[in-house]
Image (cartoon, rainbow over all chains, first blue to last red; front, side, top):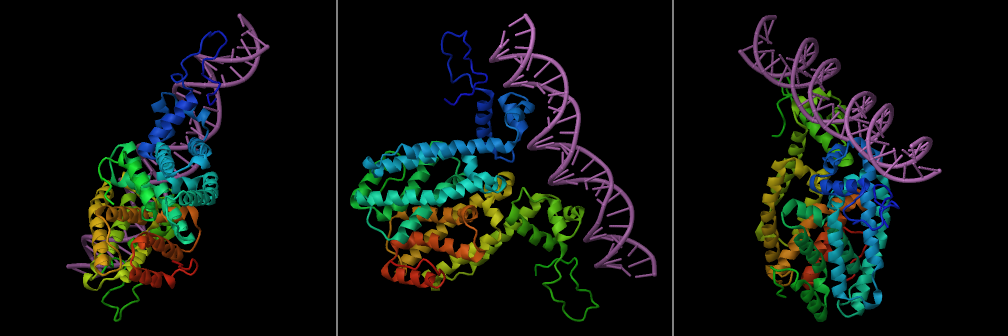
Length: 236
Length: 236
DNA sequence: TTATTTTTAGAACAAATGTTCTAAAAAATA
DNA sequence: TATTTTTTAGAACATTTGTTCTAAAAATAA
C-alpha cells in the first residue's frame, strides 16, 4: 500500500472502490512529473516552478509537500534502490541460469533508465547530497560480491569457463562501470527509442562475458539475444 | 607561441628574456584557476565571482575577458581536443606496437583527467552548449575508425588473435565508454591520488583486450603494466 | 453542523548569479 | 610627452531560484 491518505477517495460514503490509478495524490503527481522533467532537461535546469506548472499546482503547494528540492531527488533515489532490492530478493539461486541472469540484467537496465537523470548526473547529485553518496559507496562491496556470486554460479552450471580471481574482478569492474554510465554514453551519442537502447547496452555489457563462455554458454547467450537484437546477427 | 600580448613583459627596455612561466597573463590565470575549481567543485557550483576571487581580480574584469561563462568552458574543451589531436598526430604507424599503444592510452587518460570536469559533467555541458555536442558527436566515427585501425595493426604485428568484425566493434564501444566515464566512476568510488587512478583505469580498459591477446601479446602487456601497477600482480 | 486539520495559491523574501555599465588606472603607441 | 587603447574594479541591473509566510479553501473529524 503506497497510497497516501490524502486526496484518495476512501470516505465511508463511497460504497465501491474507485479506480485507483486515475486518482493520484498530489505528492505522487509531483514525483512522477519531476522524474520526467529531470530525465529530459536535467536536475539543475528544472526548477520547482517548472514542476509545479507541469503538475498544475502552485509552487507554494509543491514546497508544502517537498520543503527542499533535494527531498524530491532523495525520494527518487530510494525508489530506484528499493526497485533493485526487490529484483534481487526475487531471485532463486537454485534455478538460476544464464538466460535468467541476462533477463535480470536487461530488466535492471530498464529500471535504471526510468530514472535516467539519477545516473547521468550522479556525480553532481552525490556531491550535493551526502546521504546518497554514503549509501551508494556502501553498495559497492555488495555489488561486487553479488557479481562474483553470479560468475561462480555460471561456472558451476557450465556456462562459463574458469577464470582467475583477477579476471573475475576485472569483469566485475567493467560490468558495473558500464552499468553506471551506459545511459550517459547513449545520451551523448544516440537518439533512439528507450527500450531499444536498454537492449543494446545490456547486450553490450553482457558481451563482456563472451570470451569466457563455454560452447553451451554461447548457445544460451545467442539464443537469448538473437530474438531481442534485430540487426547485428550473431556470427561467432 | 601561446602567450598573449597583454601583460607579458616584452618591452624594448628589457634586454633579456624574463622567466615566462611566472608571468602569466590574466586570461591564462583565469583559465588555469577555473580548471582547478571546476574539477574540484563542478561547473554549476563555481561562479564567475569564485573564479575571480581565486585569481585575485574583480569579477567585472573576468567578464571583460570572458563575457559568457560558457566561453571559459569552450576554451577548456578546445584545449583538450587539441591535446588529443597533437597526441594522435605524433604517432608513427610504422613503428607502433602494443607497448606504445598502452603508453598512449595511459597518456590520454592523464590528459583527460586534467580536465576531469569536462568528462564528469559532459552530458550537462553538452546539453547547454550545442557547439560542444555537435563536435563531440562528429568525433565518434573517427574514434571508432582509429580504434579499429589499432586493432588491425596489433593483429598484424602478432599481438592479438583474429576476431570477428562484431567483436572488434564491441571492444571498441567498451573501450570508449570506459574512456569517457572512468573518471566519473572513480569520482564516486575512490579517493586516491590522480596518477594512480589514471594507471588503474588505463590498465582496466586495456584489459578488455586481454582475452584476445596472443602469448607474445600477453608478455608485452604484463611487462608494460608490471612496473606500473604495484599491487594486483599479474597471474595469468 | 461545528471544529480542526490538511491542502492550496500566491505574495513576499532573501540570496545568488550572469552580465552590463562606468569611470579610473595602466599600458601601449605615436 | 601626448594620445589612444587596453585593462581593471566595483557598482548596478535584471533575473532566477529556493524557500517562507499568510490567509483562504477543502477535507476530515467530532
